[in-house]
Image 1 (cartoon, rainbow, N blue to C red):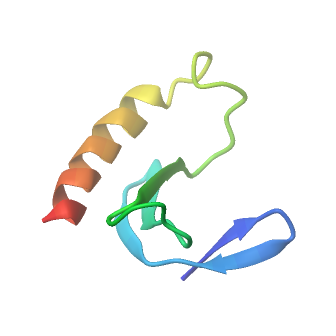
Image 2 (cartoon, rainbow, N blue to C red):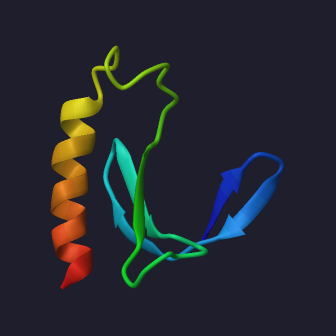
Length: 68
């Protein structure tokens, strides 16, 4: 799997996928088990977004599963 960033595609290893969020190991980690959880749709700000509850809930669940 790859993650689109700017004009390039970064190879990543998925650790979690939900209808709203995708989680993957950071391609250049700063520490072990460095993961990123990203919303699947564009949001202008997290404060103005209705996806925050889904992201936070999904990310916490995904982080627990990925860490085991």
